[in-house]
Length: 117
Image (cartoon, rainbow, N blue to C red; front, top):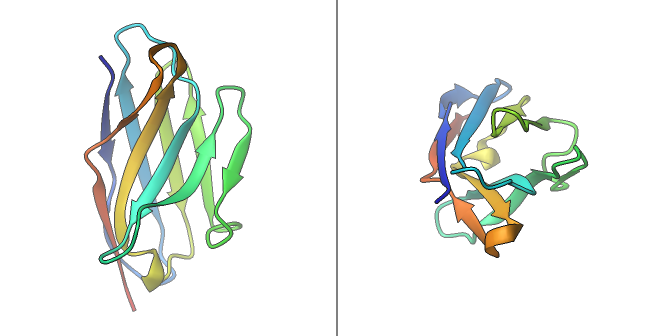
């Protein structure tokens, strides 16, 4: 019913930038909060940032001031601009979308971000 496709991951040197994008196929359903999560090897998946339909944002302390989340409600997309990347940002990044009318969240397949020191 709702499919998410991420793009934009890759390999970058420390201090560099990457921009992740996520496009949602909504089948006409309205998406509420959208967010980005990440999972590093051997660690639990953690929230990176989320943005509500109205544009309110929240960030993990570890990325504040470096990452910026944005969305386009008309296109059902959410982006994550990542600047000043650090090796500890290396992880698989997952897009998440809350569809309240269906009572569940949806996940993308993930995109790898690797930051070399």
